Structures are given as structure tokens and as C-alpha cells.
Length: 317
Image (cartoon, rainbow, N blue to C red; front, side, top):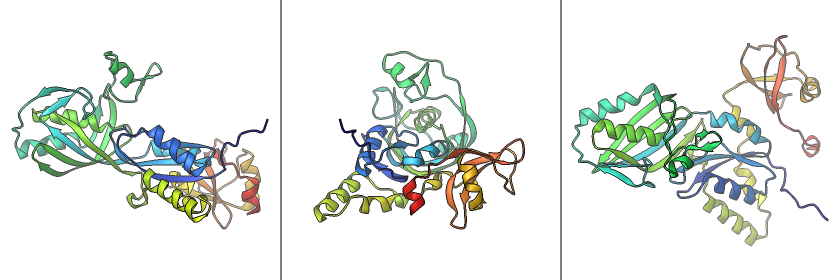
């Protein structure tokens, strides 16, 4: 029996603009299928309610997805004031309704409370796992699990507008920050309750907002390519960002071509400018071809930590 094709070898990162009501895994599988990629992974799920930037790694780029999962994020959130829900967003049931009568001064003082380094208790409706199961599964069964407060950092929390009972904020935060929890806690500080009715992720790491593309747009491009009789990869592949953009925050160490065989076989090599405990981005030759990340070992040499697979077709190219 002929073996079924698992897709083509294609490496890079798609900045998907995820639509509301769509799970991150559904979006991932659709992008993987459209690109006919043999391997794909996303860089941290967005709630179905949320929209916006969901970087999807294809091929060898999946090896570096953790660094985007750990990256800072930026969100635009609209909170509905006066109502608290059991999930802290509009997907839940309203559990309390209160009048809105806080002052502008109290609002600004309350926002200041969330800026900087703080401790946050994750929501029971988060994807954080307890004994192998996401917390939201326990919550749906009415089971409350004790959660430890975790350190987060809100680098910026900007007031955008307050129109009627809808408060709009811009939040730049560290990984692991739950915007729904901030919204719920803010509502309690204001004495009226609040929940998220719109959440949009506008940035992951330093990726540009303008490079995002929706599934609808991708589908349209594929349909047009098929109608024009051209290969779909000719219109889709130019959308990909290089896989090393996932680790662009790391300093580059460029090695000579002669060192490549040793490194790619997993061996440490000599390199200048290494610093203890620093992860570096490794490139090879005058063209600075990205091959992975590494760090200085106990012998002062550059040891690989994560390397890409260089295929024969790339060598010939």
C-alpha cells in the first residue's frame, strides 16, 4: 500500500489574524492544511472569544515556538462594566449586577494598581493544567481547584476610552498574564463588576500588526490561485516570516562554513564573544544562514541547544 503523503517540507511563521469563535487548534489545522505543511504548531492559544495575532510555526520553525510562547504580548480589551460573569467574559453567565458610580479619579488609581510587577491568581476558566487537565474542565464540572498566585508584569496599561458602560484598555504584558482576571479584579476595585466582551491580541514579541492575515483571506488567495491555474504555494509561501524571527531577541554568533559539519552533528565548537548562561542565535557563513540556537558550555565552547534539519534540497539550492 502506498504511504499517504504527510505534506511538504516548508519552514516559516504565519501571523494569523484569528477570528472570534474559533479555537486556536482549529485555526492551526486549517493553516497547516492550506500550506500543505508536514508539521505545524501555534505559540500559545487564544480563547475562542479572542481575536488577533496567533503566530503559527511551520516545519522546523516549530522547534522555536516556545520562545514566542514566552514572549511579551499586547492586547486591546473592552470591558463591560456593571456585570460580573462566572468566566469573567461574555461567554459566561452573569452572576452579579451592580450600579456604575465610580469617579474618574478612582478609575485611574485602580489602573495604576495593575501596572508593573504583581502577583495574579489564574482564572478557573484558564487553560492552565492541574493534574493533567485544564482548569476550565474542572470549572465546568463545578469543581474549584486551589491556584497559586503567579508573578506577572504589566509593562503598559493605557486608558483608551469609557463610553457608557464599556471601558477600553490597551495592555502590554508578560507571558502568563490573564486579561480576564485583570478585568474582573478591576471591576471589583471599582465596585461595579466587569467582564471582557472583546479581546484582541495586537502584538506578540516584535511581530508587526500589518503582517497579519486571516483565514478568510488565505482561503480567498488559494481559491484565486486555483482559478488562475497556478500553484497555491506560489502565493502562500511569500507570506511566511523566516523561522529565526522567533529567536531574533538573541544575539547572533556567526560561524565559518568549516565549523558547520561539527556543529550540525551536535558537537561544541570554538566561537568568540560567548557569555556564560546566554542563549545565542547561530548562523553560518557569509550569508548568515540560520541553523539554530546554542550556549556556552563548561569548557567555554559553543554547544548547540536546538538545531534545524538542513535537507538535501536546501544544500543543492
